[in-house]
Structures are given as structure tokens and as C-alpha cells.
Length: 279
Image (cartoon, rainbow, N blue to C red):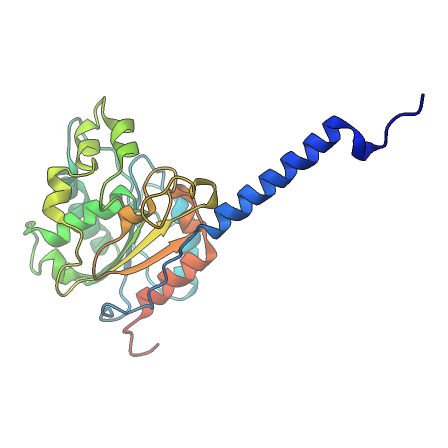
């Protein structure tokens, strides 16, 4: 008995149909992206290029900043070392005390850490800086800028020129809240719940005189999970990052990999240079 040709076999036809459906689904997910690209400086340009402070997200070991640090240092930018106990230039990483919230952590740890890094670098205590912050780190820095936090000399709003926020849950994230709702960091997680008192107080509008850039991740794999015109970066809805008045950008990267995206790095370095008379 002669076997049927391949194209007539039921399992082969099923395989071809399935492959076609997968290809169409992937194409649709890719086409669903509505990327945002606001020109650098569209909502104001920083005063120039300053030493850069890098602030990691909750639970991060800081390694995600490696590519950015190398890029900035290769361009001659001073990147402050926030952990002298480790080799190389390190971002600020942290572990909150039990039940410590965003405000308490920002005042207790973030502000003194920046001051200490400036002192180690031999820079003046009131030296202006640019900040690149990932995830929770962005909320910590926003708190310093947008509240009258005690400081020697100028306020943090005056001392921080550009704030580049990468995957920062400015509108909150249910996923982060669910992941942290029990245990010693529940207060910090509660601050990131959509509609929390902290997020309501901070608001989602760039403060007058500040220069914010908001970068969101919008990987194609999660574009079916819609939040407005965008998807989800696996931890934060893409549009949770957006702030009125800020420069807005999206890249097809997951939450922890946005700082590895070459296009995102181009944007960050260009943003930090904007306003520099020498540029």
C-alpha cells in the first residue's frame, strides 16, 4: 500500500495550520505596539551635563546599570560610585528596613548616599547631579525632588537637573503590590499600589522647573495585555511610567532589561547631554 503524500497527512496539515496561526499571532503582537517618541528636550532641557547618580530598583543587585555606566564613562561623564565596598562604579542598591515606606527610605538612605558619593569624589556638597533611576528607584528620587526634604544648602529640586525614569511605576503596579503585600517590605509595596496615598500625593505631572524623561518597556510578548495603547513590561504597565509634561518613550524590552536596550541607552545619554554648551 502506497503511503499518502506528506501534504495529505492529517498531522502535517495540522502542523502547517498551527505554524501559520502562530506566525499571524506574533505579527499581530508586533504591530500592536504604539511606540512613543518625544524629542529630547521637548518639555524642557536640562542645564547641562553633570555627574550622574544611578539608583536601582527594589531587589536589584545593580548589575543592570553596567552597560549604561560603561557608555557614560566612555563619553567622559562622571558616574558617582554609590558603593565603595565593591569593585568598580556601582549604582545605589538597597534593602528597606521592616515596614519602611518610600518616604522613609528616601530620607534615611538615598539622600545621605548621594551626599557621601559626592564627598568621596571630591565634589562640593551642593554639586548638581543628573539621575537615572530604575523602577522603585524613580519614586525614591521623585520624593526627594518633590518634598521639602532636609538637606545642607540647596534643595534636591535645585540639585537634581535631569531625572531619567526607566520603568518607574508612577501610576502604580498591581503586580509589584501583590508581590510585596506580605513580609517586611509590604509598606514599600503598598506605596506602589495604584491609587495609593503616596502616588496620589506625588501625582503624575512633571513639576514646574524640573526635567523628567520617562522610559517604558513594551515587549511584544505582553502586548495582548493592554493598558491603553500599550502593554506590560512583566512588572509595570507601560503607561504607568508616563507623566504629563515629561518626555515619553517606549522600547520593546522587559522590565529588567530596558537598560540593556541600545536605543534606550542612546536616548539616555543624549538626554543627559542636552543643554550642554559644549555639545
